[in-house]
Image (cartoon, rainbow, N blue to C red; front, top):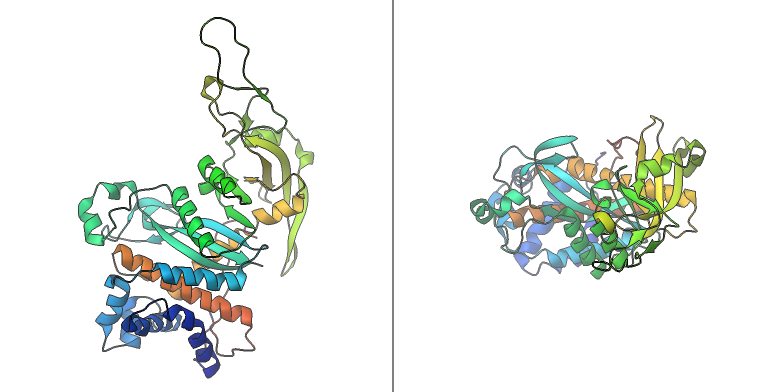
Length: 419
């Protein structure tokens, strides 16, 4: 990130950006500390942790800044709602996407809220960390996170001492990440977030309840799946067997074809099914990959004969073949008229949420919060998202108008195949 000293243009825009947020805080003391914390995150020298920020920004009131973030009982919901409205003005609309993902904060101890040994995407392995369910709104590959909610591991349900010490609300219990994601989705939609499609990786896409939840909300979606996901041919039919006259009459539906894995379904199409598709232009020309697509019905309906899942929703099965030969699989409820290029563009749009996570950690110190409480962590996450949204606001306004503006660099995406 390239940083320049603050100039009047930058400061004026910062004050204008904060106006609508300040009204959500109510208490004058909170209105005082709110911009100080954000300035600390945006500062070149003191963005790493609250202790350093306090020493640099308010050396005589270190405890007050810590109190504002970690222990002050202010309700984050009004600020969250205002953040969604502000981000929607920046990047919302029918051509935008809402990306569901999670990001990990590595921790060494065991006393920070929600910390446990679990999968950490940043390290690519199981590690001691906190895991946050993330929702990010993006348009034209400009991502802005609008929700970060802590996933509480099941081990914390049984540890009342740690729960009480960290101030975990009594009503908060272990829930699957997909349920947290749907709850956060309902919140941001109620606050006015507008988008044309929901994107998610296989961590969420493999869950039939998650996909069905999106469909029930009338949303278009494209999600990653495992190659073992069972699917049926799109023309499969279902019937109830004719009673034999002996015993109980059959009630379970019987499909006209067997389900197969997503990988086997793609293999059955033959190598000619893969075609090179360009989904957008990059800095070095068109970005291309090979894709095979076919309509299928997912095996996530009711239990049929033998306990197998009956055919469910009719969707697109998409397979991306990368230069390394690795194949990735996706499902999408785009209409049958959708083109291969449209489906490929949806698949390749999700990478920008990982970019946003990385930038918030490297540029704003998302992963350097030292407190241990439930409210403190969520306060810090919310303030970091507001700081990040301000940077994207400046980015979209253009550097020429704000010569002193902080500029986000674009890091190389860690995962292979990033668009």
